Amino acid sequence: MQLSLGEWQAIWLTAQLAGLTTLILLLLGAPLGWWLARSSSRWANPVAALVALPLVLPPTVIGFYLLLLLGPQGAVGGTLQALGLPHLAFNFWGILIGSTIYSMPFAVQPLREAFAAIDTRLLDAAATLRAGPVDRFMHVVLPLSRGGILTAVVITFAHTVGEFGVIAMLGGNLAGETRVVSIAIYDYTQGLNYDAAHRLSAILVGFSFLTLLTFYAINQRVLTPIKPH
Image (cartoon, rainbow, N blue to C red; front, top):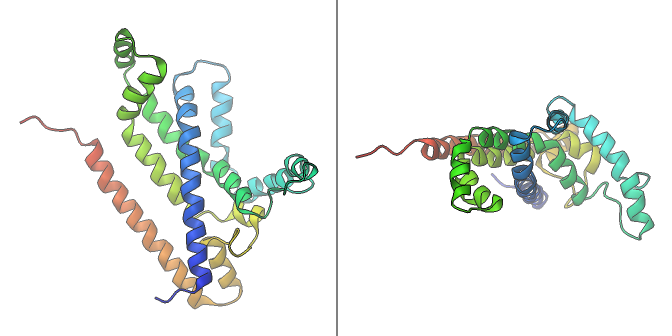
């Protein structure tokens, strides 16, 4: 299977976008998921609903409002231009923001469920040993939540690889900047270049299958309890 330079560029850009989105959402999603799992605040449900909103909203709606916000006439984009900086529409940083927002529930929900399943007595025991909140989170919560963390990583990465609507609305189709694999497939299809569209689609199908196969294998190994001899 011979890929063109532009197709390799789209694949690399997709990998960068998915990797950075996953990293950002792990850093943001871990404390947010912990708060949602343990908080009794009246704001917990509204925040949870806001985080889950991308699950029910069409990606074009999210992309449209982000375009208004981050574009040259938007509150964020206009402010950046007034400061002599480029706005965030139709560039990589813009689609990174869009992907982070759109994939947020796929990271936060597994983390929240994993954190909620932890026995609070273990945390109380760690506290009696003078472990501080950060220490308890790093050395008790995270190791016990490895299944949820793995799920969040795999689903977030795979979901970002296949994302189309938000990127199409916010990033357009700029080679080397916003032209990820899903956009390239759409572009080839519009141009009736079905051979090229099939080539990239087959790569995504193979990648998705291998990703899920690896995930299930690792997840089974991670979550299977060690039997005593």
